[in-house]
Length: 317
Image (cartoon, rainbow, N blue to C red):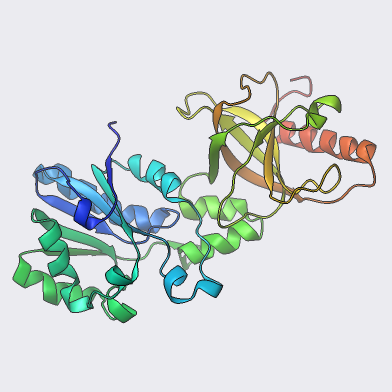
């Protein structure tokens, strides 16, 4: 699958010269509800020989309107783009959410979009999407303003999980509480971290549990603690079972910033400066301070054995 083109803003966009089917939204997390919206655009593009794209925004509007209480994002734009690329879109427009853009009246939003993207044919949104200055625009307004421009509007109903609508807010709550299983169910894929491994203090190696250290800094920090995970290179061809700790390492040397430490269960094919992807599968226990290194070593061994059992691995692996 070819990587989608990525454009920095509507005014700089140069999408394929075909009818454009555009999914619009914040899409933080690219959860199952978002995927339904984007899938509709991709399907229409494939059916008609057009191009499917995504218009998304950064930062979250709250960073502009309420910076003291801004929404912490589930994923950075680069991570979002990786997920969007897997959905088959041809291009992504990352629109900076700045005062000039935020002040566009809702009644003129589609007209501005059409001027910037003349081959725009249809737009795809969630049924509860709001837009324009003061968030006064809704699907009904989209329909009224689309017809004179010759545009079609598709609105996808909300997707529910266990009887409650899926939302980015719900996923944020699951992540900070350690409910990684719920977060993964709502996302429709496993929550993941990606980055370059860095040398650490090598303490894990000295106590028999060598780790890969990933200095990963999401806006929204998941619960500190131990997780059952799996790790791979960015191509995700071969996964390796592992156990990870995400937190400040209070027993050995409390960090100012949280670090993700991954212990591969078995032979580790990764080295320092390797790019890796870590998928989070289950929250095992909260991070805690131990009385000494021996108590820490004993608990890590228990965590390792529990993770091995959950992966159905023999104790000797």
